[in-house]
Image (tube, rainbow, N blue to C red; front, side, top):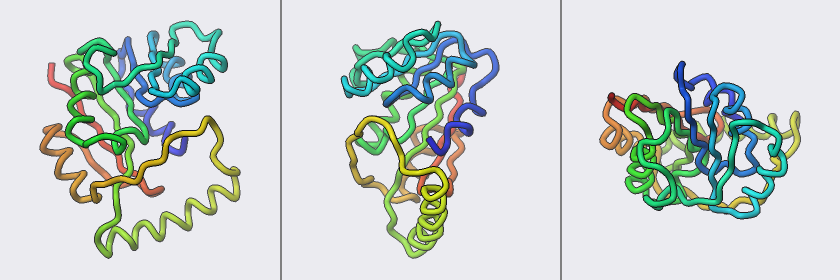
Length: 191
């Protein structure tokens, strides 16, 4: 929720088909549908997909499916000009997750990942401590996070490990650490 504006700002011009992986209640997918003509939101949770469908049932060009992006048969290979995955990748082995997301991306498409990593170094802990203060202020101003219950899983990889793996698996990607204990990966597939 915190980084939806950032994700939306990264949609390449001319994108015709978008996929929101781990769509939850469909909030981001609904916003994507205002900018991309054909949007699919997928989630492994039947409860989340049902909620997304009920909240966005009248939105043309927006569909939701109960599907696992890691399953090669679940979604069309090279089917999307824009793929977003927010708070999803750390629920699987990083290389497997990134490989599955790459497979879904059309030539010339863009992948945007907002993810979690583990604190391991003193610098990691210092940055996260600062982010904790910002998070608490945000919660006081906007209230607690709402939406369907989601599985909680602690990330396995440290920040530096994620950055190295992303650069190896997604040559030319941009990786940066974000304030609220997240990172951003942006990768443009070659044509």
